[in-house]
Image (cartoon, rainbow, N blue to C red; front, side, top):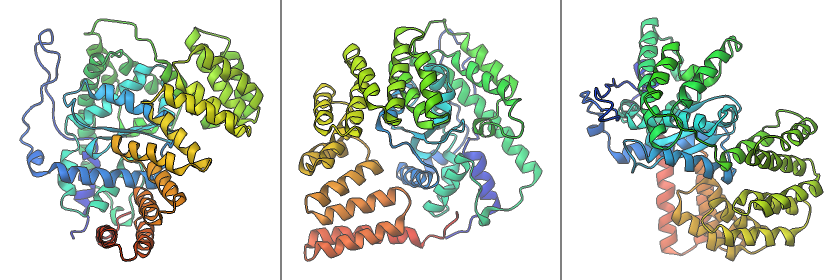
Length: 487
């Protein structure tokens, strides 16, 4: 296996943003779509979709191991929904993207191989409109669709996949590389990387503005958001927001996107209620202020503004009440919201969780059961209902919903965890150990996953089919461990 050389580290660092040049259609009136040039890059021919997918899976495992990702399905469903809306308006509308939220209050977003795009919770809270959030997502989608990661993937094909994925994850997250990569880079190389980065940031901006407009968002939100960050950066000193470290924003970048956005007719875009509620959930979870100060602030906000804004503030207030063990006040607020806005499942699930926290188990179960029938397509509601079934000793019923989720959506660590618990409760230890192994592996804990698989092998006994399946999986994971560690 080749060792990671200085040139490889430097190359991966600039390739996480991308290196391809761009051109713009000269006839904007006739065609407002960016033309992809033939830049003579052979990476798309050299790199197979299978390798990119394999590297993408390793990348997300490395990310999970290094930073906490949101396990809140309501937040995850929302960010995937808005991301899909942007992606459907891109030049690769059929491509699969995985959008996820990082539980980090720093302002940042990043793109990785195979369409993995991370958005920090701090960035969502910093945006002042849904279009601003969409503009950041559109920018990251632009990095992917413009193939800015292709050369990084081509370089990665010469390395062990875990090492390559760890390098890409470290660069994307702004984490220092390990000793093998701690080598001084010549100033000329660094400047070249910065130049390439700015060039590709401009291209992703241009693609993003167009995709924003096509998806029904306000394209003017992109220069507004980055302009506000740029103005605020003068007060940060050496502690710039992470997004300004990884996404350079010279004045020309803001003015270029503003000029591009002005080519689209102005239309007022109203924030969705889902956007408001997600921001409220993140605000309460952030614990930036004391519960007392948060409640006082939200009590004031819930009496101001338009109906949707007041409802969102009331929702946040109820969450704060419940977190502060003021269950009666939370119940009163959420009951009112549920009656006024029956189309928003978030009020019903919050009420159910409040009742559960207050020890009213049967009431909570009844509320969740009603929500399950009213919102059968909501993944968040289905998972909450499944968890409740497990909590109340109904694993067989839970398995019906969990296996259905496994068939309909890409698997997540939480699904593996719940399946492991459910199979354990139904006295099927082999499946329980197997899913526990996949849960650990999803977080990059490969050795621990192998231990669980070895337990599954013992439990399988003389079942030839199960034993063969487990042994093959153990062999796969052991081969990964043979690769030298980078980070």
